[in-house]
Length: 72
Image (cartoon, rainbow, N blue to C red; front, side, top):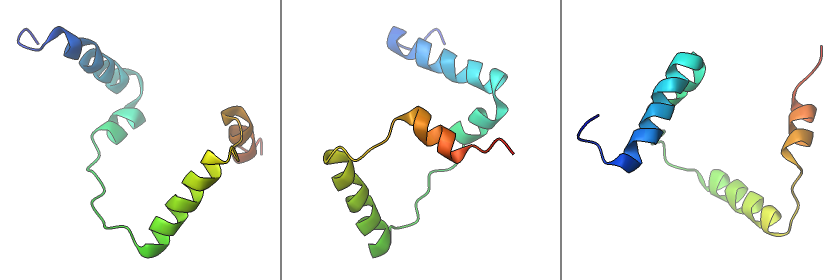
């Protein structure tokens, strides 16, 4: 830690704190990068989503969360 630049200390400290506070977040932070190539279908879906976002066809995070989370 002593040899790290000052700008790296906070992000590393935050990562370490997340590992203590949230084991799931820590697991995701250390998961390997998905290096599987995109299919043409994947690329089309990504392009469609980006175009929709540029047109402003989005919903607020809270609305999306309430639609995805069930109270059952």
